Amino acid sequence: MELGGALSIFLGICVSCLLLISTWKRMYKEGKLPPGPTPLPFIGNLLQIKTSEPFKSFLALQQKYGPVFTVYLGPRRVVVLCGHEAVKEALVDQAEEFSGRGEMASIDRNFNGFGESSRSGGVALANGERWKQLRRFSLTTLRNFGMGKRSIEERIQEEAQYLLEEFRKTKGLPFDPTFFLSRTVSNVISSVVFGSRFEYDDKVFLSLLRMINESFIEMSTPWAQLYDMYSCVMRYLPGRHNRIYYLIEELKDFIAERIKTNQATLDPNNPRDFIDCFLIQMEKEKGNPSSEFNLKNLVLTTLNLFFAGTETVSSTLRYGFLFLMKHPEVEEKVHQEIDHIIGLNRIPASEDRMNMPYTDAVIHEIQRLTDIVPMGVPHTVMRDTQFRGYHLPKGTNVFPLLGSVLGDPKYFSNPQKFNPGHFLDEKGRFKKNDAFVPFSSGKRVCLGEAMARMELFLYFTTILQSFSLKSLVAAKDIDLSPKLSGFGNIPPTYEVCLVPR
Image (tube, rainbow, N blue to C red):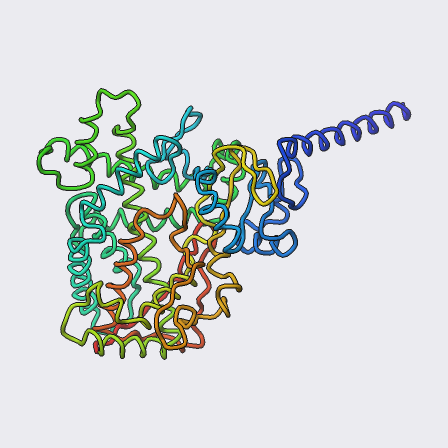
């Protein structure tokens, strides 16, 4: 019996070793991958990566393995890119190979469902021909509705004035700016995709904004990181990781209802918004079996634009207030430039930017340090790819860490410090920096970059033209740490007083 027991233990050890060796060989048989920590079966590199701080964990691994390394998020293999050079080489120099959209399991079930033969995802999460058709159409339609033209500028200026009215109602008392800023920013993209703005007290509008805000928060929780690692198991389990699914489904339901309204009142000769344009294109291509213009992609693409056009800019503005209160001397210099170039009576215009290098530099520095999506949105390689001497098999997921580019010490002299001088030359003129990539780069660069840049400039100048920011705590005590850091960096909750100038 004792011999039999010992033999059983020995055989068990042998089987375990064989399984480990088999797993290791399977992981690396497809080619020479970048180096990285040794993964364990199923667990992967979970012991080296904190789900509460994945970006910081990746930066720590960079110190040991260099700017390109491989990690296993559970059973999922990911190649991580750090620093400007590595990210540029992939997304720009080898743009076609790295143009695929990677997995985001925590929201993929909203956009793709389970077990579908091809990814959906709307314009942001689709791949292949679907992505190309939807992106090309979306860019053209947004331009036609005024992206980069005066009409979109007028929409932003109008909304900024509505915002000033709401700010004046606070009468200098403390308030949380979160939904003030999300309402005004969301109305800009709403006027494009839905054809009209919402009143600030509209209960449906406020409910949508809360769902968007909560969804962005949920995407950044440790639960979401775990779901992305172990979706094969967690999709069947109850818990907080399911909340994001229900929030996004509610947003999809709202958009589906708006589409029905548009369908009932559509005039093909007079499109009112993005939805109308998509419906017209659907009709044009109804006989084309390879067309990607269908109701499902309309719902998902509209949601992509509405969500991204609301949360990213409003979060940046919210974080920007904190940076300016933390550095009142910077706010004062912005006030001086506004007074000198615009004055106190004229509404700011986008053309003022070229004459306001310091304000422009401040906004860039706010975007750099806010670092809204530090890990970037995942990419995937579209074919077997050679990269820096390594072989990345087709379908390998890639994380281009945008935060590591925005904080690259080779391009920013003191990357952890708030310093508008990062974007100014010795004569005080604005200077571009190749490592400024908050909108990503390459073929997957953000669709709404031009609109977002215009919004940030016009909102900051309009608000600071009329108000000074007053913190409820001493500048030295303002904590800039994000409330959560996962997929996104979530600004901390705070209150501010706006003092009329």
